[in-house]
Length: 169
Length: 106
Image 1 (cartoon, one colour):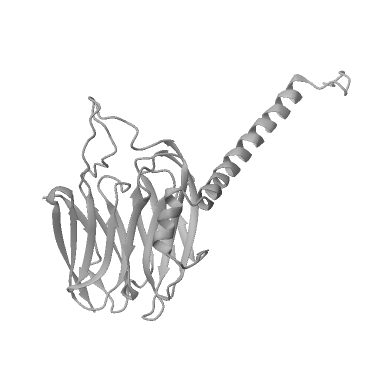
Image 2 (image 1 turned 30 degrees about the vertical axis):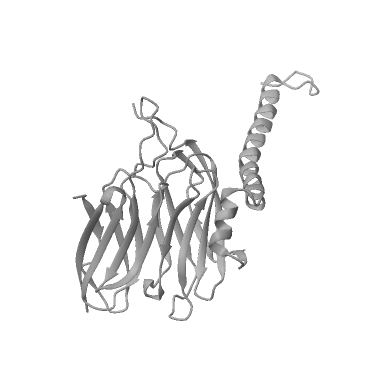
């Protein structure tokens, strides 16, 4: 079968395909870019509860990105249980080890998720637990090293159905 | 007494890094929810978890309402000597639970 239609006119199929790719691309771009941008502004504004909580933990020291790996699913259908794993790149010797790991959220009614205290005896700075998330938001893990430096990693979790919202009936 | 599940290897080589997994049954009521009459449900959570190895503290965690019901925590430690590893959870309304596990180190 040969196509007799003039080439200039776009077929219905062409139009749909183009529209589909535009919408799809726009959607993916939106999902991928919007949450980190929000996270950035939240972190920078001194008034946000997350920023003040970070300030309380870090004090006058500088919070640097790196060394920490925060493992959370990019998308969670249920905010009542989101798995969380934090591992820190550290030799864990008696002179160079991870003292503590803190996990904070941006939009939960209470910023803190957990604070754990480790020592050189841990052998490997690697913890995991499960947390609740009220909304789509960014999560930050902060590692406090024995030399007084602070390292962090941030991740955004898209939550379809948040925790804390449902009432008991 | 709350039910707790603990996973620690029964045997380990000296100096080996072992992974400890713990799970305890608890509602972890966040204190941010309301009942059918609109009244706030009071907070009832586990606030602290401590693990000791032959009496020496090896891990400590402060828990907040953002931790799920039935808190699950895993961490690592170096198997130094045979003995007991003890776990203690404490929380609101006088909640307290302890568990011990024996480990043989060769």
